[in-house]
Image (cartoon, rainbow, N blue to C red; front, side):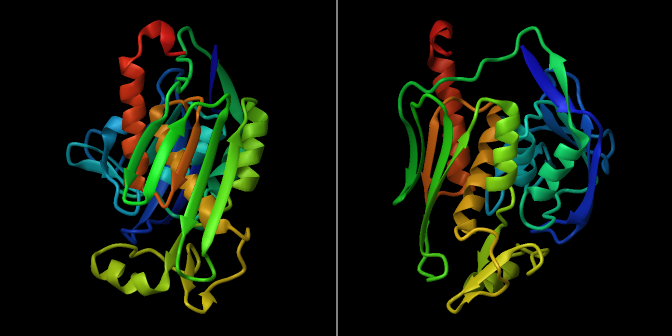
Length: 291
């Protein structure tokens, strides 16, 4: 069994979407079996925050990981890139409380990972991905996210907005078993999709202390008359970005279960609820039935 880590470090500096504060991120190779984890290098004792479901402590308009009073916010894009590009183990050093938004997508991260490459790591007891054998659902009103039994790992998402420029959109993406093909597919089909916002919500969000670092340079903004900052990278870029968020949130499981993940009008909160249910599902199965 083998895992992978980065062949060299990656460094990026940028503004956080919600904090509006510039931070530097250094992603370093990590030992086999250590997983993906954050280190707050700006704080005494360099506290470590694991990229795990148990560390999630906030899910309003982003996913936040924390340990005690220490936290790192908006981790989903970076974690989606690392997990989908095959980086099992990574030490993510950050000198602030929020991962930079960069251009609003995960393309900078995937480009960086492709540039430095990966190193294969032998492991003695690598966990085999859990196979979902019965439907697992989480819903709120007409919004839902679920994991369905399937022969391969697939992510499908639907969104529905009153704004004509967005409307009803669906997209589906297959995470292939071959690492090279999965990396290339994610980097071209999902990673370039940027975060998006609705014009009529911006003022309210800013008054509540959110999206201080948002701009037309790092987020798509849609109003009644259409997009304020076209062109889009895909005709259905918004729903592809929702898949990006879902992949990042479910990466907190460590490895992606074999399942069809299907979501409609969901949120980070629902994504994380599903991840927790999947963990509970795995724990209640007899060991011989888990894989």
